[in-house]
Image 1 (tube, rainbow, N blue to C red):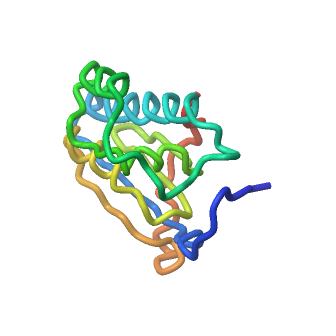
Image 2 (tube, rainbow, N blue to C red):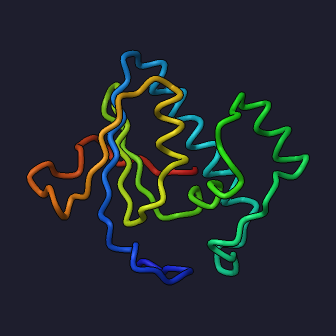
Length: 142
């Protein structure tokens, strides 16, 4: 059963994002960054009571330290809530396949791009013949 903690019409996107990396090491780093952010956001936020769409205007000192340690300077505070969304991450060799019903995916896109991926994004509703990108299911944020 899927439980949404906010209301919006964007919950029917059926979005597929495929990042294809030249090097496996780049795909590994992107996957690790996504996992780190998913774990951190989910560990700090009570998903049942969080206010989606009302992010803080600035990072806390703790978050700034975390971003420096991760060497990530391209994500804004408003993008952090995206790591609390229901997304599925699959890995297929040098590809990372992300699927979600959300339309706000700029944080994931930025991570993939900054780690050197060529990225394809589409709605599986509009392109059912393309499928969901293949790969093996991998738990996200664990």
